[in-house]
Length: 182
Image 1 (cartoon, rainbow, N blue to C red):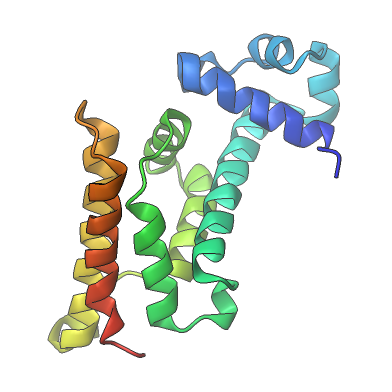
Image 2 (tube, rainbow, N blue to C red; image 1 turned 45 degrees about the vertical axis):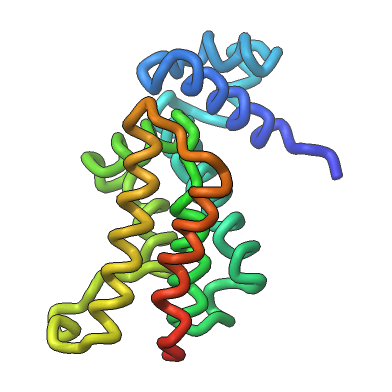
């Protein structure tokens, strides 16, 4: 299947961010990376803000597709434990620079956070206040925190874990959920 121009533009913008950071996303830089004219970009995105919002959505959609593949099914067909297990397995993988930068930026801008928050809500919802006394809910939340912590550790440090160690850690975290069949 042929990739749409819009997707090609979003992939080009992601490459620009990988190399130069979010602030470098301009119509000129993305057009050059995509091999298009600035007018070609304006056809798909009316403003830089529209382009940045679309990049957030694009990256969040890719992330969710990876989680769904790990689960072997979409979120609405998976149990809460299956969803969180898939999330922990994916979250324990290193992020790309673009994902990290966009997630960080999204955390400070509600509109940009919305695509990321929607994925989190479907796959790894937060511990409800009432769950504080529920050992299973606490175990689920601890598994989420461990997976997120590993993701941040590798994203923010120079140390790289071997694929074998990362896999062992991911399976250990996911294994804490195996005994919960919610």
